Length: 310
Image (tube, rainbow, N blue to C red; front, top):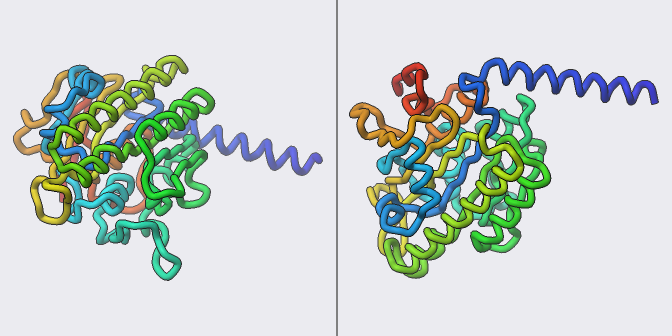
């Protein structure tokens, strides 16, 4: 019993020291947790046409661009993996877009945000609407993970699980994937009335999540980033089509500059790999391997300039 207690006590001390080190290295002390929401298939102009008061509110009190770019593949799983590793598919190795099979690589060949954050003492959670996200559910990197066993579920179901977890656990690093806009695009077409309605439903889901965080008392310490994995045209999306490659990138939270359209910075281009880099920057995490993404520090008041992309 004494040996077991000592081991447990040591683990607590180590975890506490790790968390303290992360806190000391966070550049924005008021930000101690992050919420990343990806609305699958959300083309920026479709967002701007839709009834989306919650997202528009984030734009008003935060910084944004409607000209961010996703990976050249512009499909769900490779693009999300780049979003959560900071490197392109040629490096993380996830080039497929369906649930993995036994005969091939299962997890990314690059550390994910979940892996690095958990190692730094943060609690991590992922709630997704497609079964293919099992590729990002590497063992021992997520404290809580929900990946449906069926192909695709509704946004409301994703929001239900997320709200419960916020109420019970308040994860410090939370990734939420809403699939409904992509589903509507493939079914009815990108820019269709049905897809506009799907954007409105996704917006309502984000509102529910933010309300839960406010009730829990953690919203004021949370950096919120709403983005997407790809756009689309017709009833599909894919490589080299600018309508698939362009995505929104919307940030809000403590010390984020309000109402800032990032296109005022002529030489600034935001890539999906920058999402990972920005979240690591805020959490005080130093990626152990070189990444392609760069923190978008222009969104913060009195923050240093972002390093130039190599």
